Length: 492
Image (cartoon, rainbow, N blue to C red; front, side, top):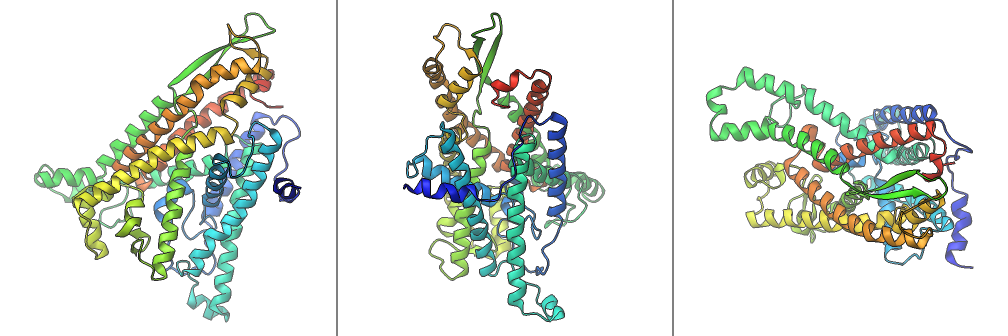
């Protein structure tokens, strides 16, 4: 018996959300989606019992696209899900695990393996934070309760794992009973919350100004003279500290993503049995969506987690950290860019003076940007190719879906092979171009920064996911009105 056949019964016994037996009406899908969204916000505001205020959030810089909330049950966010996806996609893409993703049995095995790996990743991502002393128990609370701090630490670990498991099943509920995916929904929720906070928050930030854009400018108008604002230093102050660059960047990214999402190649289709029935199959420029960018950033985050754990144990050969920020060594170059404070030399020096360590030289800053650009563009291409193969969006599965719907490409024989040849002309090439382009767009967004500290990557993901969610809602409404369309989309 092969390893795959041995593991299949185990994967089949894993707890799972029951799939709907028939078609789920649009209103019910919307209800499930909104219900899970409300539950996510509730859980994100449930604090971990026994957590010390001195605890350090290792993933603070990645909160926007990890959809987590510091100090809450949602501490891990979607991190374990995307990390498991990275591992499996790399193993399948390198043929270490041989799976034919056009085969339904292999698809089911992939899904089962991913779920099993998510459970492992929940433990592997929670344990180093607990064991490394970053997530610490509240000693005063332990003394009040009359229990040992170790017991409170174990309770924190259990709570974090429960939160990770809950978000896994919440994602599964949305995927089976709702609209879109839970992962995308949680990212949009987290980024939207940060942007709203970035517009209206009156709490002072590290510069002493209100954190929100509108309160900040009310404060500046009342307290800063116009003679200073129109000097060289004043203009830099307005752009960076005043949030104008972040506001412009946010608007530009929004418009760019909407434009790029609407850019597509349309392959004509005709129904083989119904004369005059025609349609089009759109191959978007961002064919694999922006979700592979989550995988790229998650890979960088996990590399940084390894560096933080090693540094905490006194192994500084790969770099030293101040909190969760690498300040030298190879980990500095491998860290993602989040804002202008990571690449404008004067702002980098300002940040590093706050850390109390020497700032990197200009050439080191340039190498840091170049490394991040390589990660995003090359990683975007690789993960985009893996993504379409493991999600049934490749040329072969797409050709089979079109053929089974009764459609064909005018001028070609009606068989799967003919449709696949046409799809091979477009899908792989567009996937590569789209992966590189979205990586470049993510880099630009990260360099400029955004409102609320959501990060360029987070905002890019959120806008694209919302656009795709809008399209999913439109297609659900279309299938509700025209039930025959369900066969084309592979729905029952």
